[in-house]
Length: 249
Ligand SMILES: NC(=O)c1ccc[n+]([C@@H]2O[C@H](COP(=O)([O-])OP(=O)(O)OC[C@H]3O[C@@H](n4cnc5c(N)ncnc54)[C@H](OP(=O)(O)O)[C@@H]3O)[C@@H](O)[C@H]2O)c1
View 1 (tube, rainbow, N blue to C red):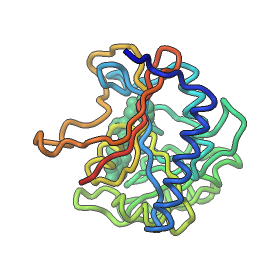
View 2 (cartoon, rainbow, N blue to C red; view 1 turned 135 degrees about the vertical axis):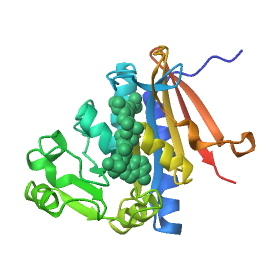
View 3 (tube, rainbow, N blue to C red; view 1 turned 30 degrees about the vertical axis):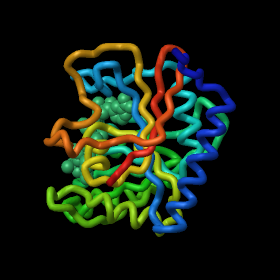
View 4 (tube, protein in one colour; view 1 turned 180 degrees about the horizontal axis):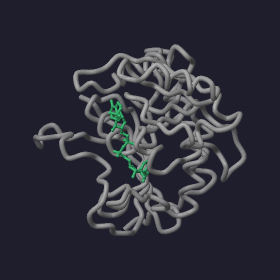
């Protein structure tokens, strides 16, 4: 049996070149960003414990790879619960590189004004996508910190219409978008068929009850399963990384 190749500098470089090409081609054709869903999960498909703790599911080498992907991307997107739970910086720190823009999907502006993405000079690279459900006074307070607030229309579930958000990102020259979670955001991108590529880091750990990476309501019928194409598998320390295109027929 062929062993799983190790994620080396050379194949990271190859992955980056391929993703850049795919992103350029999609942007040229549609004006929309190429969307990569990236998350770290345990062997039993959890991205966090029941209390929401997700630090750190993956090995350090996988974290470095994740920072390479951030460096490659024009923007990183996360849901507001991830900000409230983890208070991430969403920057490139483990390698030398540029920080992408940070997009927070927050329909009612529940974000805390004390969170890291709204602190200091870096706040100017944060965009909060919200809806008409948010308070005007809070919009102003966020703008005072230097961040941008985009008003996006609501979908049927009164959540942010991700298709509209992608269009606005495209208009703002975002060609490659890295969606990092959490579960509700990953599920929405899959449900609406808005993701192009998947990078899943699988750690040899078992959590048991916890936050499931893809919500069970995504697919009710076996015939509606989401398929992957041209997938590749790598080993990164003890983790396994699956990298694939999403096949929407
Ligand atoms: N292991 C990993 O790779 C990883 C990565 C990231 C996060 N996480 C973990 O994931 C957990 C958080 O995940 P989560 O599922 O609770 O929340 P989430 O996906 O981070 O945020 C979801 C929230 O975003 C807002 N939203 C607005 N429009 C939306 C839309 N169209 N689709 C989906 N959400 C929309 C909703 O809040 P409103 O209704 O208020 O707008 C929704 O509750 C944390 O425990 C975090 O540690 C793990």
